[in-house]
Image (cartoon, rainbow, N blue to C red):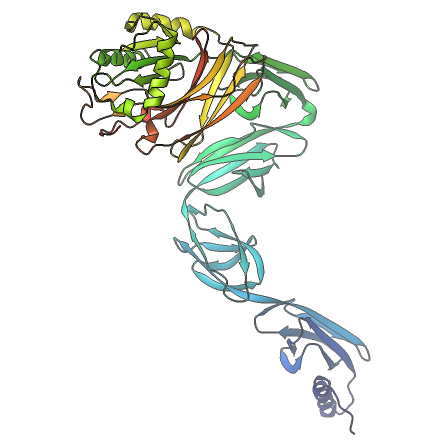
Length: 560
């Protein structure tokens, strides 16, 4: 049988022999091995197709040759190789082939330059082009606009890659600088890969900027900047080498207070410590339910340490409870007086709260009918514990029936009572939080925190859901009132006694109150208070509102 030869070798050999015959002498040849991953690529030598596919061995004339391969749907790396062929020796040319997929990119508005993996692709939206299969980071750049997402991670497939459509927003500039330069920049809590100084093109709105550099302290810790369309805002930071810093420790009793340094929030809570540049610093703290103490100025020495210690005082919140009815002749006057304490007297809801219990006096009362058990339970407690005779209007100030056997103090006397009560130090705070007033269930968290040791004979923690105001299109009763404040909707007594508490001690209680569809969520408040069941004194109260009272609705309606 005649010997068989690889067609590529035969082809190259014939070319070589022809060349030799034409010049009348025998030309020297060498062998070239061409391989690719994956295999099957067409081989070109000096721009001429050889008819061979990888892997292939070619006999070529001695000298330099330019070798390339091609395979449909693939990117070849490198594009060409210049290979010297030497007589009697084997040369090799290797190529890597990557599969390509098609990607369509559009934007609104159009005309945005498309950057792929940080490099300008030369395409602008809308465009369809090929990319190597796999993940790529795409960015769109259009003067005067910005991509809210910043960049997009796209997984390019051989077939059916989902298109990328981006809505661009009007943009402004943000210049981030530091002294010294070279700090890493974080934007909206994400690393940017840029260092100071740098100018960003960002969507209009607020952005949080931070910088960081090894062995340096940064001031301020972060900046919130407002980017405006067509304008550039600057965020500047000062970097101090760690060797020129000292330590500042901040504590409070009770702990958990938020800390401000030089008027800027730090995001830290007591107890905590900071590495600060040498020099003076103003320290302030704040804890919900406690009075803000006077800020302290401390001097931090290089390599040294200093401390700022705060003893907090609980802020007194006064609670008064009223017995009322829509058909009560004297109730409109009491209700107006109490409302004037807020509107004219300036006693805000951070200092004074109220709960109105309703009685079925003189006919049907929609507030009593909405929760007879809750209203009657609380009123019965006071009737059995005081000289109250069930008559309304009546007011219980911090658990005390000021006017016996029924009635309420006048405006001037109420102001005196309030001022005296608000000046007291209850020793502990009651902080109320509601996850969502608009949810199917009001999830209430009550936290009781003591600044000093506090005890009571028979303490009880109560929780009331009130609606303020309740508004009617037409009067529901006999005396013309259409607006009612602090109407009790639900009342609960939490099972665990909140006192005694040691100094700095904190306890948390949970309650779940089903939302009633007839309630207006925007007008609701959750009020928690601690009462000594023996003396009837209300020791402390707290409340949560959503939204603040100034935004509550007063739309008229007829409903319980």
